[in-house]
Length: 78
Image (cartoon, rainbow, N blue to C red):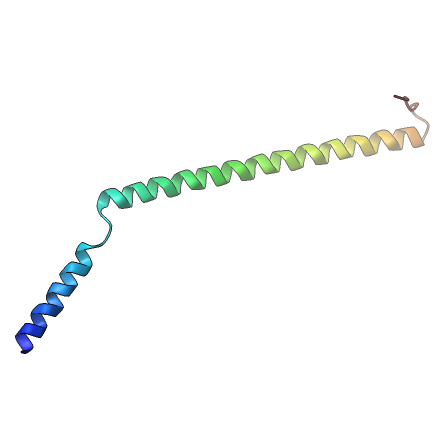
C-alpha cells in the first residue's frame, strides 16, 4: 500500500511539473511584459512633455499679464 501511495505521489508531482508553462510561453510572456513596459514609459514621457508645455504656456501668459499691468506693453483687444 505504501508503494502504491508513493507511486501516486510521484505521478502527481510529475503531472504538476509537466503542466507548467513551456519555454515558448515564458518567452512570449516576457516579450509582452517588455512591450507593456515600453508603452507605459512612452505614456509617462508624453505626459511629462504635456505638463512641461502647459507650465511654460502658463509662465508666458503670467509674464505677459505682468507686463501689461506694469504698462510695459499695451493690451491687444481681439
